[in-house]
Image (cartoon, rainbow, N blue to C red; front, side):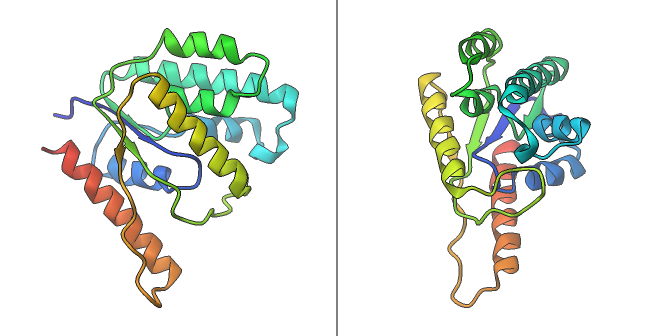
Length: 186
């Protein structure tokens, strides 16, 4: 029986949701990306959000993530409360969100971190701005450090000379998936 609380973290576009889907297919209890569900519910892409809506959106996804984590005793998730704060740094409601996060942080067994190593894929849901992606990544790292969480870094394998991009992506996803499995089943 699976008895851990696990986060797979990083900025957007690192194939976290793909790995969560693979874990779910193998009967691991997962919490799928609540931010994407909320965008789907609102029929929006991240670029459609205007500043006023952004505060409500961030508050909603934070509450949804808290509800999901409370509902499941053990889980693997590709979004964390800390990540929500990273996306909320410039919002007027940041201090309120931070209090909500502090009151609901759990002890996680593992937090896997994927460094930025893969080009962004257009999924019609997230920004394609690489500078913003790196900014979010830096915020995520600084917040995990602030809250004293230790991250397990999983780098991609080195890309082979003349390796087709799609093959490299599949190999990278497989590498990250297998590395996580090694932690979870031992």
